[in-house]
Length: 102
Length: 175
Image (cartoon, rainbow over all chains, first blue to last red; front, side, top):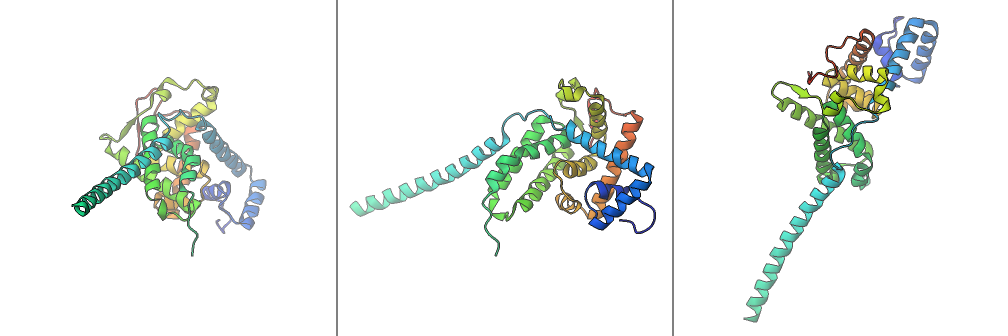
């Protein structure tokens, strides 16, 4: 926070985003208590944040469940790898057994 | 030595909606937002060994998706992006009918992508400036100025009520 007497717009943002230390926060509260214009701006900033939060709280559903599709893809990849290993292993064992029997 | 972190899949399972919401806010395209979310989840599951904590995972997933989102949007030749249909036709929910919500949404959409990004991470994800700077890979000073500019522009747009872009518009600038 600014050490000077003037409170910048960035200071107000620090305040509403919880980026101030405890003592700076207290100082800011005192400043706001004595300055109606700044207090109004802070209210406006907080109101806008709240409105943004509300406006995107109710967004359209995704086309599909991305988690399920992602995990299925991931599992499919693992299964392919396991299947590949199994085929190679079966082939090797079969070939070794055939060689042993002959 | 740090403990092994085995909660990547459960974390993603419980938090993918937050990821989707951010993607939707940044792109306003249901199809693209779904695809970005799925790609991010797939990538994180493949690289699950690299994560050591929830915090690290959270920063990583948003960073990955933000980069992915920019790449996708930059591919668009005119650097414009179509509004998704629900927006042009107007959402029929009670919430959208509120003029306040309608006004803030239009103002928010009119912001640059870099401004929407910082506000999304601060407001929805409750990230502090340090974490936002890690997600976006920019210095903290840049985060501070972007947040400040974004909120200042929002106030102006809300007060003027004269938006260059109306909800009926088909395109909106990303830069």
